[in-house]
Amino acid sequence: MLVQLIVGVALLLAGLSGLARVQSMTPVGYQGWGSWNRRQRIISLISLVLALAGLAVLG
Image: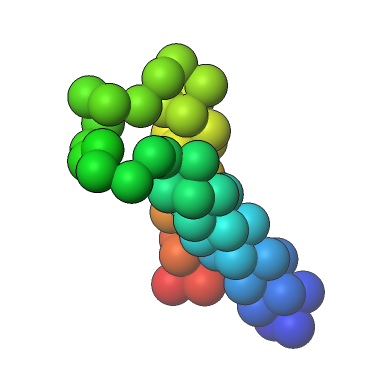
């Protein structure tokens, strides 16, 4: 149970930090998916999957 909690929280935090990283890479004034380059889109998709996996493990 404790290992499951640790893994879930680690995945969730990794996903959220990846999403925050992509947001910080976005220039001021640009909004949304359309203004992101390919690298940002890939990082955001992987981060989203990690965050959702963390929620699934916790839930």
